[in-house]
Image 1 (spheres, rainbow, N blue to C red):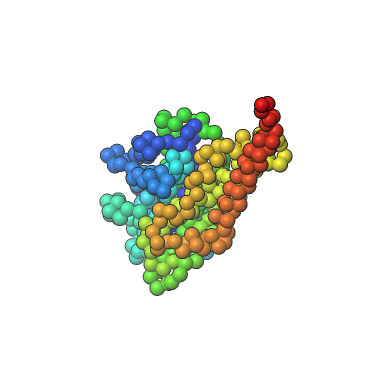
Image 2: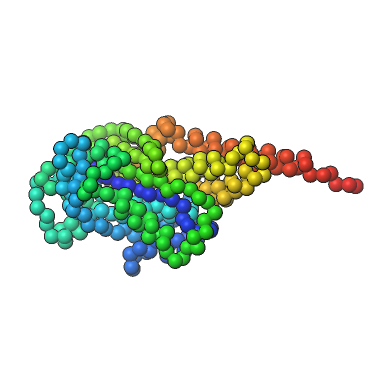
Amino acid sequence: MLILGEVHSGLLQNRSPLSVDLAAQVLELVLGEAALVSERPIPFVQSPSTLAGVDCGLAVTAGKPLRAIGTVTARALLAGGHVVQGSAHAVIAGTDRTHRLPWSYYLARPGVLETAGRAPGPGVAEAFLAAGRAPDTLDLGAIASQIADQIQATEMLDRKSKIKVVRTRLRWAAEADDEASGVRVEFGVDADGFRTLRLRTGPIAAADLVAVCEDVALHDWLLTALIELVRKSALGVIPRRDALERLVPAIDYLLHLWMPAARLSADVQPVWEALERRPGFTRQWETLNRRIRDQLSVGAATAAVAQPAAVA
């Protein structure tokens, strides 16, 4: 089984995190279908899934693109009331047919793209993960971006975010083989917020593979945002009080959201274990976290020393 996907992650354009009830209203993208809500270990809301019909090329590493026909599953997610994600994915399946069937056939197989005439080979995942994209080939990023923008455009938001950070894009491919064992993970960081993730696993449910890739995208964004905020704070360059004031939004809204794999099934825990070995997401997060807290401690101690003694 081959699944291709892309996740766009960014900060919700609102002054404060949304409550779970309000977030559920914002993410109610399908009339009559409620968003999925979870309050533990952190508030998390997932919109109902939507479908996008596509008939386009599917890039390969060599030769002419395959023709892919079917539907892409898309959804929005909101973590901690503050981090919004647009996610799109599809299972790629081969078929001997070279012609398109009525759309009712593809709608009955939501989230599946069939390749016309031949089965998708190993070059499909590699070509999909490339930073560039050939014209008229599958563009899951456009679908993911559109659903994230739809959430950001809602009238319920005040557009007065206290943090300015980049949006990241994680393009991923997961290959699940019934005869394989173990997990192989390849994670890459490119310029302009572009990341890639390639998974090779044994038999794991498609829903679990999608969830772990969305979770990786969330935590990669959190780490990216914290790195950027620490850099902008100019610690050690400007007065400590001014630097700490720049870090207050990170302390208020981001530090408590770091919980890798907290909502995932045990089947995909090895993916996070591999990422913790290299590149070491949590190790870098904790290093930044300690630096911020050390600066807070030093700032508090300095303020206490500078405080004039009370006169008896």
